[in-house]
Image (cartoon, rainbow, N blue to C red):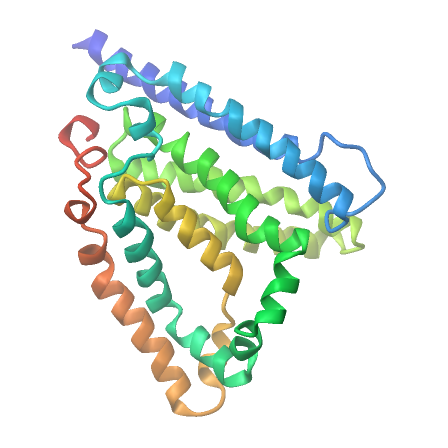
Length: 286
């Protein structure tokens, strides 16, 4: 019994250390380039694209060497990474629809103000897609972050933690990894105190999103589920909740309806059976 408990403890420690290494390497890759430019400069954006590409190539090795052989016997390596065919379409559509329901209020408010009409114009879309910042926010950041922090981290944690615990730990790594933005804020002339509190706020909401993304990964067993939602959320950005209390009562109603509907539909729309997923909630992972 003691040997089994010791093996479990060692498994948990090694999983956390591997996840820590992944998070540190991911953040460090953004700062390996010395340059006088800020993070919005095209040169820096391109170099960071290359950095995270290398990290994404290397990250799966931690999963390959960190997983216990008995788990690799029950699922292929690609399946553990969330890459599989069964339930793929559902994994794209259902989580995205669920997230849009949550953002019902903000989306409608933006539509009233004209931003959605502007976004729907072909010329605006084409010009936007040409920019590196669009590719960073909609493609590269969601792809690299979900690959590293969900696909490569979660299976490591799930082999020795219960799913809810693994989701919580994974979201902490994801949230804390965003604290590095304090460096950019200090370079922009923001005071240390303000930069610290802004970064703590950033860590807070990215941790919450990280938990949601991890939950989607575990429920669907698909990497594409949190990836699609991440890209969508980067596009609409963090909603201004104060807008719910400004103007007509219908604005508040839309925010409220969206939140309540999201809570009611969360479990039914992410039922593992919909995605042919019996991997991460299986008793072997509990």
